[in-house]
Length: 416
Image (cartoon, rainbow, N blue to C red; front, side):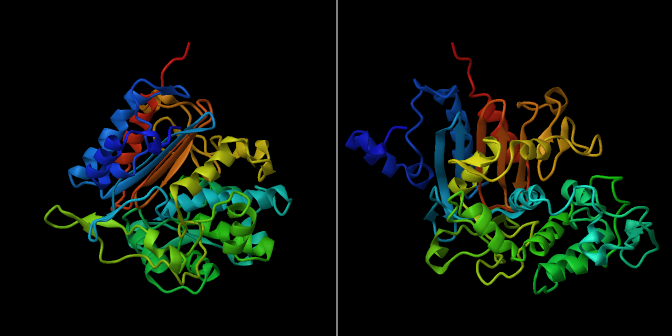
């Protein structure tokens, strides 16, 4: 990668004068260069898309990283971290990654699987007795107080990992979903055990194994991590994942010295103007070490996590997972229960199963996920490629995740 300080002084001055939307971009847009099979001129379409979204006031700022064949071929930061303060965004900006917490906690959980603590077919009640005798809502439109029936089977570890247990995330819009969301995220909870125990008091939305329903099941994984390891999930993640991967910026709280690197979430006001949201999740003092969400991270840190996965569990000679474990995590585990065309779901990841049916550019075996504040990543083993895009924008839309794939994949070229 070229160093910006090798450019003529005039060009450096021009880059500065172009403003925050360009000042943090890396000097990797030379249209004559193809690096690791990516045409820089074609990749400029992705840069121009991001810059235009920022200039048109639809996105506050964004950080994007692309690695292919072990090389960082794209690292840019465009726009602002805070529109209120007009603070330029930085490449090492700290984001609330929301549901991109789920893959990290799933990896931690599967490390304990490799140590023999449990089998994927084990009932959860074997380790958490409160999971016996759960009930299923007969009509989710009636809410938590409606008629219920006994679950026709026990929830297994595999059901938790694949979102087929019958739990909800509270996002489905039914009366029961709304009540679950309020109970889990609006009420005060001391720790992850308290939140999980609240969740299992609510009826299931369906019988275990009979539907894919996006859920708070990873919170149960977090509680099981604490059960098997004797540590808090925060401590386990730091010791077993963040320290080995040199992820110094990832955790459930942001230190006071790094608070200035945090990017607040933004939203559109009633007049259609993008503004800083009045309500922000706390950046310190968090004691619920969840599996559904909760982690802060940076794009460079998350890239290290993705590198480990692309390398089949290995990072700089350290083996966090077996290649066979990564394989089973990234293959479709739910048959046709996952309703998105051409997509399935593994253990903690969405998985592309049929490119033609998906109507998107990509590869069979690509795996991915995203976060509620518009953070996205995917890993394509066939193309040896990792792509990360992070912003802080609500409500969530997969629009930017779709455009990221479209504009990154079109930049791949045939090499002779």
